[in-house]
Image 1 (cartoon, rainbow, N blue to C red):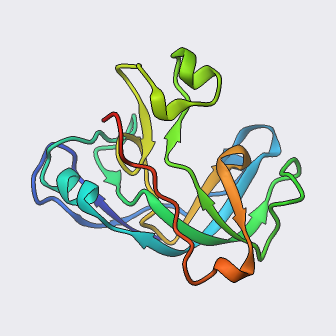
Image 2: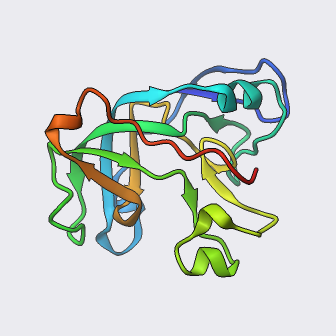
Length: 160
């Protein structure tokens, strides 16, 4: 599977990376959602990451798949995914993940005070500029068919 990635800390390192196609089984407790990417926003954050201004690869990798604004169609779901997320449905996924601060613990991870933070496509988690991604259903949000032409989820502004 193809993905667009950078080598964090190395300016101008954007490249095409071959990565394995993810599986719903990679998410615990049957909550995995496999999404085929239809649209990804590329913005100044991605430009700054490619300029090596910030960004970090996930543990075990020397590259970071970029792209934090996403829109896709569900291909497969695990057995414990809510009925609102089903194959064929359109979805977006959030960027930030909860950390250890009080904000992360109450679901307000955008207000984190953590020194180490996790943002897909920005810091320590691969992003969405790939053919498919798999995500925990609690970070996936269904969209109605009527938003197919305008749906993209952002959320990169704030703490970096």
